[in-house]
View 1 (cartoon, rainbow, N blue to C red):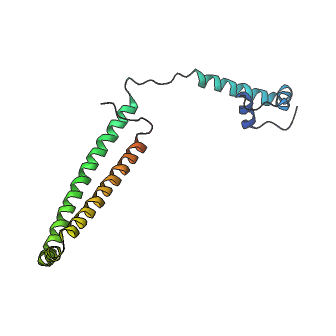
View 2 (spheres, helix red, strand yellow):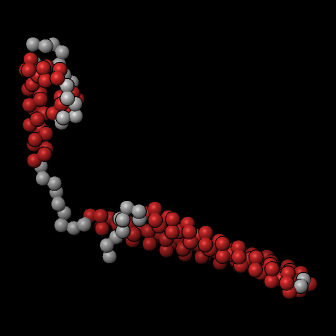
View 3 (cartoon, helix red, strand yellow):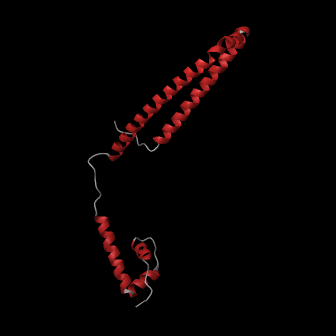
Length: 155
């Protein structure tokens, strides 16, 4: 009998046909201890393979995604209310501090030609359009990343 035994990893890999080594086969013909361990592993693997998988009467993915979407809607609603509240507060604060300067600002615009005023307003609108387009692009990118695995909820 051989005094050096095969490791558990080697025996399992041999049983699962992950390695093909003639020295393992030769060792198993000589060593009864390793042969018994291989039989125990074979019995264990066969028993595990006979276990039937659990089936659910409901769609687990749909339930999980519905819960995630409900949480996201609740969270986004709270964030939206916070955003609008903060925005209104800032507009009121800025407006209250800028009231004394409004006549001076209007005087600057009245002293300029109509072409200059149109240029300033046009530039502001173009910048606003670019910002809106960028926000929309970022939103679509994030939405695509979230749903790229088609884990959309079933409604």
